[in-house]
Length: 410
Image 1 (tube, rainbow, N blue to C red):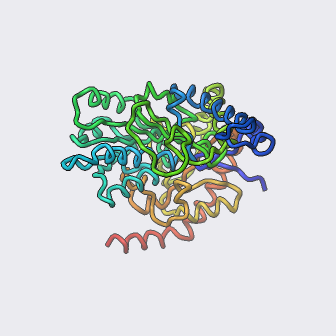
Image 2 (cartoon, rainbow, N blue to C red):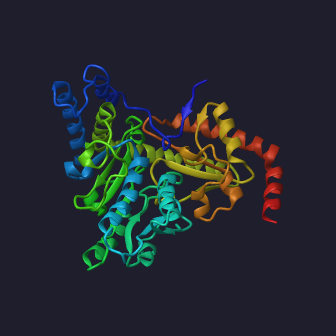
Image 3 (cartoon, helix red, strand yellow):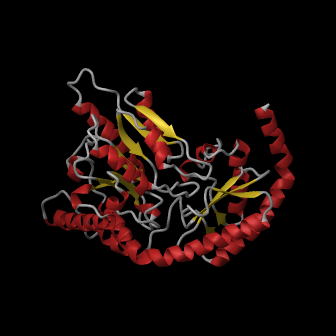
């Protein structure tokens, strides 16, 4: 049985060219990039080459790129590092305000949990902005939430579950007005661009962001490596202790093969993006068209117009998502019901609940995400099997699920 992979938002296979670039740094060129001998210099040069590639892609300076273990660490460093810097700056001030953070209700769990952790520890006040029914965060809503003690705004670029694209440049432009005003506290803008890097312009100057997070394994690079862009002058301090790597902002021995892979992967995007986007958008539209036409009581979650080229999140009435996922896997089709990080959870997706879906609708959702290796035949096989599985599940469990949710809501 040929297996079909339609979960590219969870992770991507490492590109063969990326792997080829990485391989020498596992064995022949194995030095520690901080060592001063020849082995270390070779590794250090590879790290700096990758830093140039990454900086060029984002329109940043070399000293503004911090390599991390991935977007989760980048997001934690961005949020907690800024709050920690605020407290260090005001440690001798007995009357300073508790810092205020603005983020959204449908961020990735690492952003939500980092923010909630600060809130629980009484280190920050947090406002969680609700997206509209299409899954879009509007700049005017962010503006209304800004307070005199607001120090950080964090809005994801592309939602990882429903693929909606946020107006980051518009929000950044709006926040520029606050940065230019005489404010008591510096206002910093961060975006988690993990799902955007492959498909959208991530020039930090155009987006007007102070910090941007990304992860290599979403762009045909290796797992365990990512980066945080930090605009020069941004008040941020490390959140873990150790050596002086990464401008003394991120301690830990450099993951040289991973960093090389990140640099290689990110450098390939611009030359492939136009071709890949055109192909993937066509496949996504074909997929959505077939599903909505051929499967009754199906609904696209998010926005078809303001959505990522590769993401289709669909809800199916009278179907339980976990059962759907398992039966598709038995047929050789790999999808997900939401974020791969929480796919083992039985609770309905916080993203789908945030855009107004009832729990039973959220439970019946399927995230199908495409990539550069997806073919039209893959889509046809997947949709044909999906139709049969949904028909079978509705016969078996539709009434049971309806009764269950009626009991829960009454």
